[in-house]
Length: 155
Image (cartoon, rainbow, N blue to C red):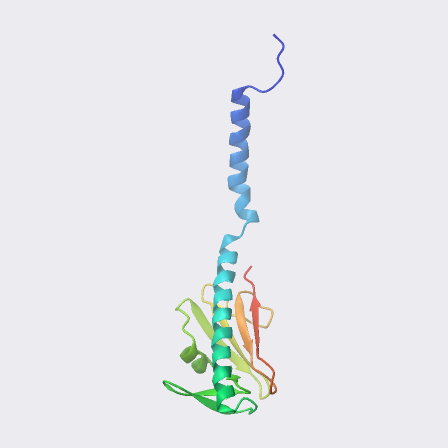
């Protein structure tokens, strides 16, 4: 008998080989850890944006949103603001947002521009603006200009 096609055993062997290849090669192409870390940082960024918007709203009501140095009242005291938005100060941000112990804060700046960085503890500390796996906040530099929230994805 001359039949064309594959036997059941040949098909099972091919499926097993494909399964082994997929199990060993897929993790190299799919970096789920970096995607999960980036997703948590996206949540931190959204929290920061929401908090800054609420602070700006309070500043608009108070009428000090055009001042380079001012404050608004919170339940636990005054919050430093610049042009109606929170200053890039670690202690001020710890008061207005609550991120868990998996994150570190880093602040740096000059007299004209201040930056706040929040990054994951399980990644290296950022060394510059292009470091991966961090969210950074650039203060507003003039009236009627919102601060910048920049997310560098994890790799």
